[in-house]
Image 1 (cartoon, rainbow, N blue to C red):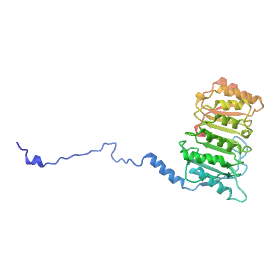
Image 2: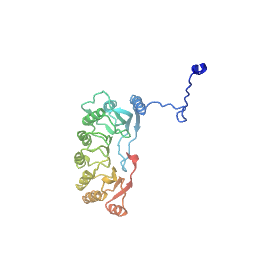
Image 3: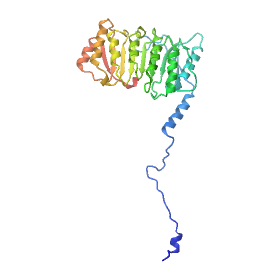
Length: 302
């Protein structure tokens, strides 16, 4: 029998009902795109300028004998750092001490100068708080920057750029430090430390003798370069050692034994050590006899 006419002409109706979790929901931009756009906006902002007062030589903080201008950029490239340094170095008569800080390191198409003379640069911080997932282009730029920068009066240097690095780039970091041998007292490095021998050679050199504070962060063991340095009684002025290293990669007892040899060489100023390891009461007591105190690790330092 033929179907009824009403049945043939009736249209099917399909209804859609949004689930409660999707009602009013806007997926927005993908996170990677949003972050890229945010960094792009921040990269074109001019640096902030703050006049920092001179600081006394007491305590473990960096000592700046004169007030200095602190230039801060949230995002920038090594080429931008070079431009800021060269502009600031020639902006004042007579020359005025200054510092430069860039939190997130990016790359651009600018060329890093072969040589950057910065005798009045007293503070430099690169990528502290930024991601270590730095592009190869940004690494190449900062490598050229480290190689060409001559900052002979640098007091504090912070460089945090671990991740997918190459061994041949690390020596340029130590070269930068050596050029400030007479003034560099505070050093903070977060590297992959593929060139451990390069680290040891620097720490054992007279160029590192002025260091008062040393901060090292890595997922790899730095036991050998540190122990060898202290066995040779190097770093005579060191008062603070901070190690953000997995506890399994540090033998604290061996470290204290090496520091005892340094103490026997008449380097007997108190030394504060910050690390993640659990320290027994017996080891604390032993370390106290040579002026060593252990403090709880604080992630905010890095």
